[in-house]
Length: 172
Image 1 (cartoon, rainbow, N blue to C red):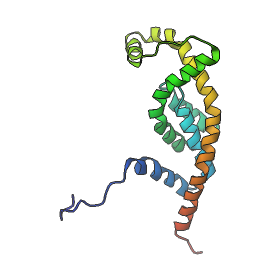
Image 2 (cartoon, rainbow, N blue to C red):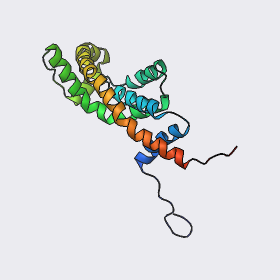
Image 3 (cartoon, one colour):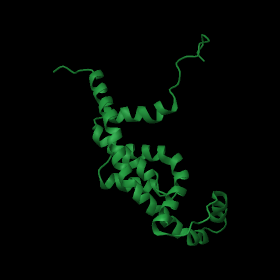
Image 4 (cartoon, rainbow, N blue to C red):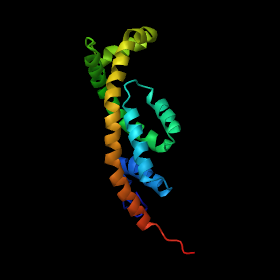
């Protein structure tokens, strides 16, 4: 609250601070809407990879290999996290169905407890389940990546155009 008792300027919300402002900043720095769309799409898709803890490293590798914007890739990875956990089971089931494997019992509390009590045993017991999740994700990832790039490009182009119109012109 300000000294005169007024509330003062409102603090921007989560989406504005954590998503829109960084995207606007990247465009203002000269990143093309096409590169930004691809960077965000790669980060989102890799952020859904069904092995917890692997997504950050995958994003660094992909951004380096394909010369994408690391900030945009990691931003999208961060935004994908709430979707990663519930989708793990979906990817595991899809992978099991694809290879005609029996469905493994999947109680997250039991899995966490098992991992905490015996990490090497957990990895031994559930390595195949993780592989099934990767198989399921691998089937979904390519079309999802293409769809995200096509969905993200138009609004990023419009935003870039709006930023260019607002930018002060420097006279020579």
